[in-house]
Amino acid sequence: MSDLKVYSMASDPIYIGTGGYTIGRVDNTIVRDPITRIPKIPGSSFAGTMRFYSALELQSAFKEKYRSKPAERKKIENIEELFKEELFNKVDKKEWITTYSGNKWSLMKCAGQDDKPNEYYDNDEDIDKIDSEKSGHCGHCIVCKTFGYSKDSKSQQGIAFFSDLNIIFFPVYTRKGVMWITSKQLLEFAGIILRDIESPQGEQVFVITNEESDKGGNAINLGWLNLPYITKNYSIEDELQEDIKEYIKNKIVLVPDDLISHIINSNLEVRTSVSIDPLTGASKQGALFTSEAIPRGTIFYGDIRLMERPVSNDMPSLSQVEAMINDASKYYESFGIGGMVTRGFGRMKVFIDKSEGGTEDEQQS
Image 1 (cartoon, rainbow, N blue to C red):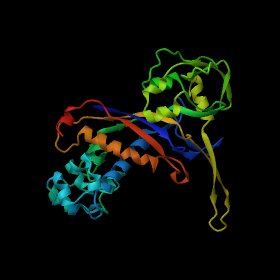
Image 2: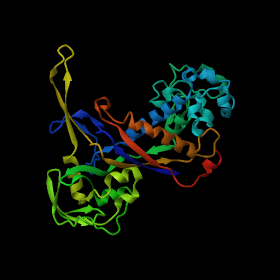
Image 3: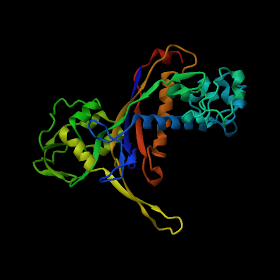
Image 4: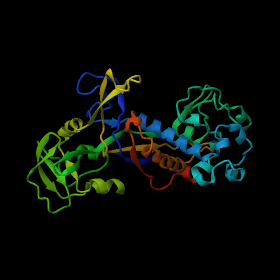
């Protein structure tokens, strides 16, 4: 088993809807944890987009004439000879692409749901039978092995398991500028233990800073709430990625566990939209709707667990899967996650910590 820590920071508001309308403050609501009522990014959304971006990274390495023609790859016997055969773009020479033999079967349709789970081709002699227009998952490439596939004649569970991305630091505008709120419980869920600080009680909050000039004793506004605060000298952010740390350094507010959900839900971004009448170019009557979203600057945490399978020649090593996930994560900065991405939603930066050490699975690669 290999465990990858995931941290992400929203570059745009993120909208992952519940799929329906409600009567109240907003029409289109977002997904929330059923217990804490704090918004989150579901693991299914994270895994689905990661699968697509992984397949996109793999297919972009193929030269154009080979991308949709598996039969053209049939004559390649040894994956290490790919560059001599000019199958892959040389600028995309990556170990997880060029050394895993199953990649020569891959199709862009490996990225999504297998809507045509037709016959499973088991050997190189049948590769020319694959029709890229009619086939679903190939069942052989590193994408199918990592995320799983299901054919009529054979299915296999993936080796990657994705958790939800939960909020750990949430931006709120205050008279001191933007501050990132969190609670001791949220930090503990993320594996960050505050050994020298107790959770604030009542309506009091702690401003976590290393700046000596801020002695505290006043009040700070967190949205519509005005709460007294005490300054605490501590370094919570040391547990985080360097890129994220720079944003929130000396700008963390620790709030009581029973207030965190209320503050977050009171400070979500709410955007009102309207459909345009194509004939008049003006707003369409009766088409006004309001959506809520997780605001930009929100910091999430989660994990990806990679499960070792019994020694098998047709399975990628965990190190190859880690490399694929790291390379694919860059697409979140351009294409994003969730809904309404064409309206300026969804982009985020994803940081993945590679697991330390090696495994028996990695040794055999």
